[in-house]
Image (cartoon, rainbow, N blue to C red; front, side, top):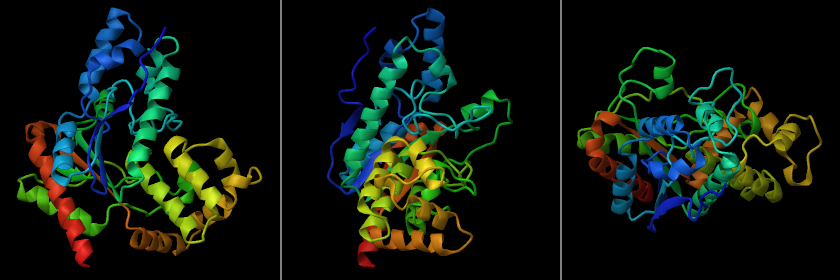
Length: 349
């Protein structure tokens, strides 16, 4: 069985502003997913239901509106999220019961219903997509994810029988995979309180959304989130900054940058960082870095603040409630206006 090749893996909108916008869960065509899944009609019907349920209605349109307004590049998926989720690690986290924050790029249903050879083909798409995003992010100072979320809770909450919880019309999300007392893998090497969205940016975007009549409310997610694309961008900038400021060997930093975009749970890194093995030549310094990030002191947080002040990198994750997706374009314009206001104030400062 042959599968479509990822050439390219993502749809790209041109632009030159130093901001990259991505809508990793935007609506994508069901037909693109069909070749990877068991052809049994009942399974194909279930696939169609999943694709319709799991995509972020309106996020692609909002992202495109923001990109046009800013003159910035934008990226959206070709393969639908119901088949493969670009905003998750390929492997996911080991969990007794799969959750939104532990699942990998292929959730349990998708992994169980692929054609023979489908997993390998999809990993090729996944790697190509992350490579495309990484290349586009090289020239970016800011990385913006645009999403929409369910008005009454997540699909996982619904499937598990949880009670509905009304969500705000719009929210800014600051969850990260290293915001935990017990990080694993690459998350060990970042400060637990490192957030990529500066408070002035959060205020600027919140104000712009409210001017356009989007009621902004609290994020419905825990502080610890998955290895989202914006987290990969921020982690990569962090490791490169550590090398540029003499805090980590450059060869080690480049290895960690590559892992941020490919395998955040690399077993070789985990063994070296936890002292289970000697440090390879390209991972010298990771054990000391892990100890510094995990120590009961204020040093790690201070270093994160210095990084954000000196590097100027920023991330932004915004969500639109899915009963307001008819207003996706003004939502995207509001996000762009907030970003412009923040950047203008930063230049003046």
